[in-house]
Length: 427
Ligand code: GLN
Image 1 (tube, protein in one colour):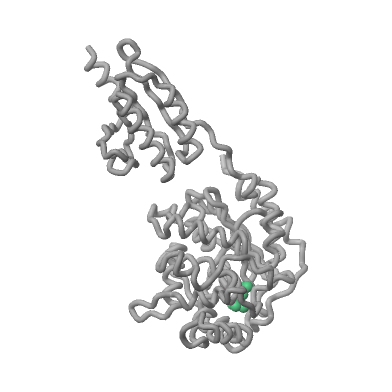
Image 2 (cartoon, rainbow, N blue to C red):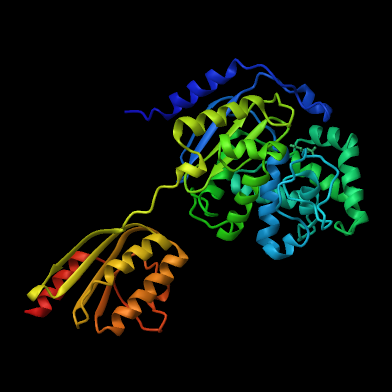
């Protein structure tokens, strides 16, 4: 059996191929030379499996799709507060290159050029590397291969960067930029000239979809709070003045670039990248939009309908041992607020006695921080009631196995072994 996904993706690009509308971004002369017929689509699952079709090995410049990654980099280095002091998070409802500031004199968000140029200025320089080179290395780490700059596109954009320069001078005038605006704008343009394929983009996106951990290597590259901030801003501001339309029709946090790429990231599920150079009046790829609309519709990927409703995580509960003195709970799934609340409600029914309670966490896939805190609080209360608590947690995901009241928990590797031992002890 072969998974039907590649066939489905091929079918989608075939259906989108017929639309020839739109125009190439010609305000960057080099981009006007692009082959307008190019079309590519890639998808990465949250566990890092990549499917791709069409011109999936063709490199093109990342352009504005670099903005969420530059934002992620400075958030990770400086913390959210420091970055928020310089750049807001409000959708602008304006074109990407609008020469504008919010009422508080900060750029409205990091996805439009004024906010992205400001974000670039915040990159802490280290080891004498230039700011764009620091980002190239960071994005290469996310992509899992060495990315390179397109010097021709960079030179061509720098020569005609009047609009971005006027944004830079405006930001310098109000003190948002603190050094030479020309250097910063050039660095920002160089960041936009990094070359990627759709496969690189989905791999970079999979780190965001997976909460900051590279699914291929298991390495954490970004904090969870940084990822949440980046995806929120992509959702509200990523498609510029078309952001509201995008939220209601596609419902996937996304970012487009004027070379024709669109990257969408659905947290916990997939990342999707499309590439086709002809753009609509907002500067978004015409076929790219069509592709993401279709995928969202066909595969039920809209954020507002994609969240599975919380389910009880108690897979089974049984009593065993002499006089049914052992109460065993086998849990499965994700432990977040809603599931933890349901679990504690079930545990509430345990009679107040000296009995032993075994909780098996082996099949819990994710323990969210709030889930862990609520769980440990519940454990403390059960111990206060007189119970003995034994946990099966082979991956040891409960911090140091200590409760909030600093009690050491008894943690075991295997449920069968534990129950056999307990029964033996009863004899
Ligand atoms: N480098 C481009 C610019 O600043 C990026 C714009 C875009 O992709 N929307 O104009």
